[in-house]
Length: 400
Image 1 (cartoon, helix red, strand yellow):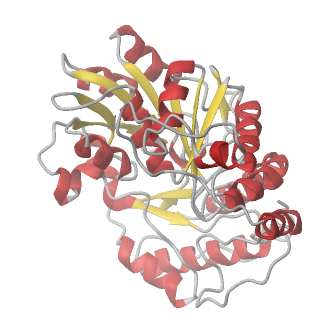
Image 2 (cartoon, rainbow, N blue to C red):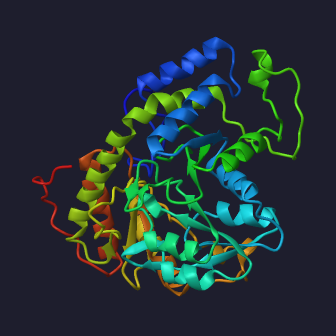
């Protein structure tokens, strides 16, 4: 991405960074000049653009990826007494949304250190008589195993894709967002399509789409834009809904940037490959997802590491911090959080890996030399922890 003036930050290499292209800034300016800022024609156009890009019949834009999950749960009539199976190694939003509807989250395990997506066998073990749906997360932008979808279908439960990391990703069943009954994407500021806030629900089911469309705006049968333009003059509320609309500015920016997403994702992949090559010389840290199916196209949303057993993650993160390199953890397992402690779970491998996860910087305009700097700092931090010797510095032949 190019254009814009970055905000001063304490990091030499931040975890994520946004530089909006000029066309997105211009699109936002056009909306501001128009005087119509709430959901309207640009939101509708963005929905059409996303549906065409993902390959679904319908897309419903909303205020966040979490809102998309909440709309999906509501459209599938998930409620009190139901269970929703999901990986524990994911953001807490999916579990929170289930609890707020009176349902109970059930947590499944990951495949292992080489693949942090949900284990289809664990998922199958977690499905019970009260299971209403499963949430399949494409962790880090890497599609989960198609067998996870089959495990849910065999048991007759709904499939929700948590595709917050996976816009532009694809696997054996097709584009992420087309695998299940409904999928949920995020446009938060650190996502591959960064709008600050925003989300979208995709589906081929017209009834799910219509329900989500109405519920996102209080359950009303007409919206403000329709009344403003004379398409409607009144409304009813057959079912109480939410206020989860996306604004016109974000939608216009999304339509402007979507044509560039494949290129940005490809560059993320090149940077990930550079990380992987350099880390081959580093003892005490590996990147998962090294071996992927030939037909797969990841979105490369984040650059996760699995540290070696016994490595002090806090020490390593501090070593990078001292060089002004930001890191994070994706994620604290949801079952380890106070709000979800005691939930039914099958998480042995997740527990074993939880303290070993560390996420490195990744974004489209990250420079190859910055990748080198990050790996140098990581190597030094691991060496200082007594786990590895710093690797040789010469890597001039590597290219993104």
